[in-house]
Length: 355
Image (tube, rainbow, N blue to C red; front, side, top):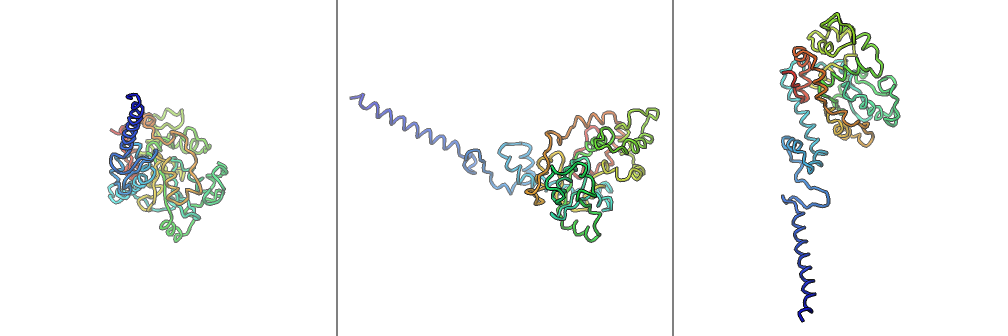
């Protein structure tokens, strides 16, 4: 008799335990904050659009996996807004004088490339991936169907690449474009950029521009090398720094002509306090900034920024410190005084080896 009831009782007990377990799992999957249920790997974030810049900074520092969707949307909006606010604040301050302000001269207009078809202005700041941006604009202007089709010899040939400079327009046309087009440029840690310019023009020179080694380097060596008896080895980085930090550097700048674009300040190149730019990209975050800029310009479905080799945009503190280890503190400070505007306008920290 007792054996007859054992099977139904066992079945009831198993069913009861399954119901309890199901209830427990359901409670576990609910969001602890009550903001929404978890569905697969999806995470629902509340009121993302109301997060402040300060809160976004905290999220970035904490680097929580649940914040990744924000990093790709509202977070980038806030970062770029903050960059422009910093620029405007330093420009209004005026304490940097001509280190933050520049005349919109022909030199500046020569640096700005135009896409009338898509109403874009791009200010060239050499040594921060500008060759790739020029390729993007060449495609947008319709000179070539894709970036892969552009011959390397054409990119910097402004008679053939279909990429006009703003200086080629009349004064009224310049004003019209400055007031209505989408405008952007890219910056990089100022001292790391100078190292890149030195290596590219005076050490490796991959495009073979002999005038840097044969015409410019000897002039700098004669004027700025401390040991004039030492003439071997070409231009040393210490010589280059002394030239750049000399308050009277403009005398040689005039002699060197437009070749100086590879090391003059961002202020001198793009006049950021005088021109109301819509976007400032950073070389250190170019992987994110490139696609964001193209999206804001309304061209992300037409062209993509070329693939970026892994690690190439990362700030290399060790490399910077090694290059400056042989430079005197006095020469480093004089160099910083010249580029202080570039550091402060774009949020770069003073190098620790200044002190």
